[in-house]
Image: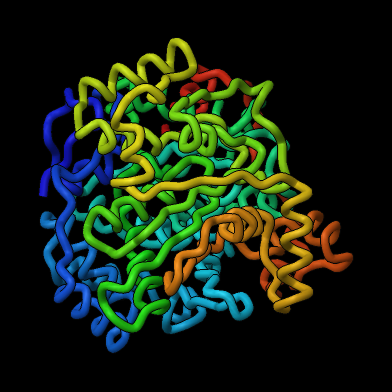
Length: 476
């Protein structure tokens, strides 16, 4: 399997090369040259593998379709090392729980070390990085951006790993106290937290700018763990299959997924699963007040917002107005035309928008690709958290509440389960849970008093050169 760039000008590459590179040299995002197809018969075989051998075995079967430059025995061992009940709490790894009598389910993705769905991919990424760097005898400096959960998941996955340093940018003061404490309390020497005076999109722009400085990137061996890294998105494809197998009893029956979305990575993994042949009827994008993606799927207009119009909300991991992974879907929507994709996103860089409302292919977003969307507000989150707790005894976090609210608004399809992807455990957003329920969520014992621990963090302006100088100074 080879990989190509969404902008069409980068050479084809193998998996392990793009694992360490992140962004393509032409500024695009990597995608496989084709999506492997899963027949109904093969889907049945994968169901049996998941039920009898577990999640790690399913992960190996999916990943091996895309990775042929790691020996199968090693790839299987990496999956088995990553997805264990000891790390993720249950044999299913991502169990489903039903909300009431309706065919509405929550897929639990937040039982990992940092209590967020990002652990599902990041734990694998840490093991892949360590394996490939050891094989090459190299080191890697990881530069990332987080709006809340990517940072802690990456740092917990990479701390203590040989040959790896992490430089994680985050928007100063815009994460929940628990999220900040998870990251900033880590004392490992290979972990560096950089709080940027700005919003998440500023952090993400810095990561892309550094990645596009090819001389700096090569000199300091810069890689990325953001979802612009294909390996992370690929790992997320697996739990769509696991959710499907738990919600259905036979091949051919369809399911739908509602995905709280800011950067479009999580739901893009669902798009990949659907393109492979997983019987997904709809992929529903749920946004908060930062509704750039909802606006696109309703109107065909993609209009990014500046920092002054990126709202600070009670589902802060989705406070994003420039969805990096959206380019991957647009590439597919445009028939994998790299030149056309480049033109659109270069236009976004200049004008902040593009308009496909008059393009006949825009209808494909909902028809051929199955996308729908909806929006949730702070009041909606409070009401959904309260209703879900009072009626079903199930406590959900603010982002998952956005998903549940939007899922309930979708037209019901008879016999088609709707699975909402859980984003995080409620403890990460304690203040809003107290506002909604009048009581705090349960806190795992290992996180007691985390907000009072000493913190290691450097505050910098939203300036690429200052971030590069910090990296250079700490790579000596």
